Amino acid sequence: GSAFFQEWLHYSYYQFSDMHNYIDTGRELAWLMECDFMRFTPEVVKVFLHLEAALPVLVAGDGNPTGSMSAASGIITFFTGPSNVAVCLVVAAIACVAQLATYKVVREDHPAAERTALQLGLLLVPSVVLWSSLLAKEAVAMCFFGYLCTSAHKFARGKGVVGNLIGVAIGGLGVAMVKPYILFPFVLAAAAWFYVSRRDPESTGIKPVYLMLTAVLAVVGIAAMGAAFPEFATSKLGETTAMQQEMGALAGGGSYIEIGNAGATTIPEQIPYVPLALANALFRPFIFESRNGPMFAASLESTMLTVMVAALVWRFRLGRVWHAVLGSPTLMFCLVFVATFAVAVGLASTNLGTLSRYRMPMMPFYATAVLLLRGRLAQPAAISPREEEVAAGVRAGA
Image (cartoon, rainbow, N blue to C red; front, side, top):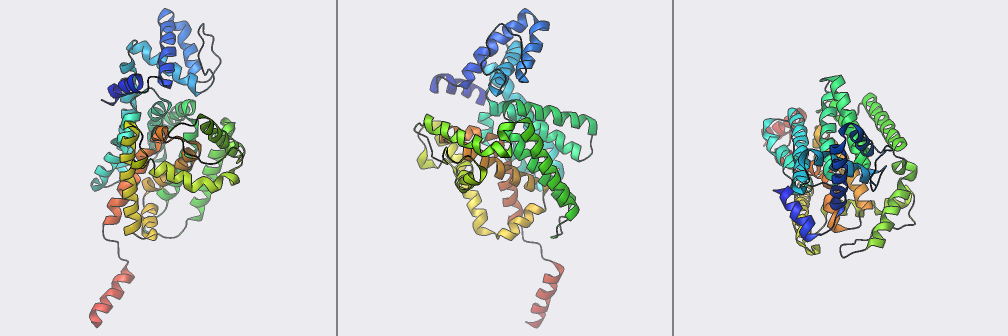
């Protein structure tokens, strides 16, 4: 349903979008593959991998994620034929299978009572279902990201080490070709998951060895990502963010929101805008900010999550929330991934109309964290033996 809706939305409502370019170029690449499969298929794969390719057609964005999307469109079109809906259906199906795989490995770490929360969060967030059902960078990234998360989880649990290590490489490579910045919060979140999964859930102390190993994993991972993608290295991150903010300001539009400035080219200069970036990515657009149908639908989802987060903050102490996070590797992964992803997207996104699509990869983990916390914190807090002993003495005295 979402795939057919995307066909109408992009060709009748938006009338022009990036998907048009991907599909038009993809048809040319598919035609070349049909003419001489053995000659041109490797060249199309090179385009997807940002490598120099010998092709008789011009591929816009050759050597960057735009070229990768055109190549993905060509490969899909080769099998489906020149049908826009069919291309969207293939992407939707692969993204759905990837999310199902993520759910299947995550549910192993949770009791049956929490499976409904996991199903709702990982599989049925409306904006994720909608925006993973078209030929867009975020949707293709979701296809590979689910595979990355699944393989990394199994690898960490010692299941099929070699096969899952290959899966991590393939999933990470696919994400890197279309949305490389997603890997940065993933590395930090995976390191945090590792630490929590190795500590005693009933302990409140810090495990120095595991904490140090976690820090090393995070630093090495971020350094490796920065070396592979210099524009996202810590030394260039502020400059890259400022450039995105400047481009957004020049584009303007009715849904434009101002954040940062072109002069804030270092990380310290961007820090003052972090709270606003978090608020934008996690809670906006508000209902009264809606200017069209898609934006209104996005505002309903963000408003519901905002109310749920506000209820958690209002009802429960921060210490109890933090204890629940420390007791769950899944919650810790979600918290770190969502926080870092939200800051990055919130700082770089200056249009509320496209924010719903840009933040889509984090939404399953955002919704899952809120739903799991809501269920766990609603249960009576565990009472320590010492507290029970004091309470018994009070009752005896009374």
